[in-house]
Length: 365
Picture 1: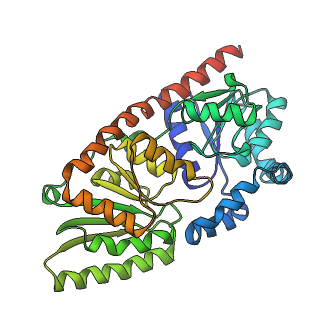
Picture 2: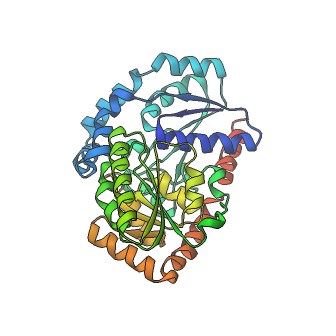
């Protein structure tokens, strides 16, 4: 089996795919490409102006733009992709990034492998996410499946609702340190790249409560990291002038995010799908402070619809939620109950995916 993937969240999904198939006894290999040139504008909006991505996302519904993207995707790393297929001669190819799909569809005719495509936006998607030539498209839930069929006239048998795939280590419950049992811990994440949109919320945590451990992950952004380090100095000054104690811990991009989520009582930040469902896997509520407008709009709907936490994208809204959490322990505990229901659904996603692949493998014999 071959898995084709790109950076950050897509790579996290690919790692979860490989983990599931290796556990089931499949031989796997991965082809990774970062698409740096194509991602420059996306990276810029992600880090500095997440609200302006909405019109760009809407443009992808235009057939003319999709044709341009299709031609581009067939050129990028074309020889390397085909060489990998020739070398490995896979029975199955899985894609976790849409820019690979058109080339994979082309190679599928020549090499005869089966193709599974992951719909990597759980609720807000466009035609680029779907592969009508794949044997299976894995969607987040039954609503997403229904919407895909209605919007793109996709064949129902080519779409399966499997839940969101998360690496196993996120399901392991963390043990709180004895010294932190009386101190609430909040993890604030700016996403893998690091979005500056979280900065306006940081002063709220200084007035949250007496005992607070605040963990901030700045991602790949050097600017965000340096700014948060300045905030760290403000926290130290506050300790000297008030009786409040805020313990602050600052990280750059880390591959150990599962450990930080396990340590937290609440995770807050950019509502990307992987961070959201990794938080759910750990049984923790999520506070959405920002999102990439357009492709992540649906993530906010999911949080509200399934009771996975709160959406508070203004300081006024966030202040109200944090004040309620600080004053009423049941307010947080009630969300944990609904989060655990979603956790149980997603626990089965890897098993469902492997079962689909094994059925396709049997059908091809």
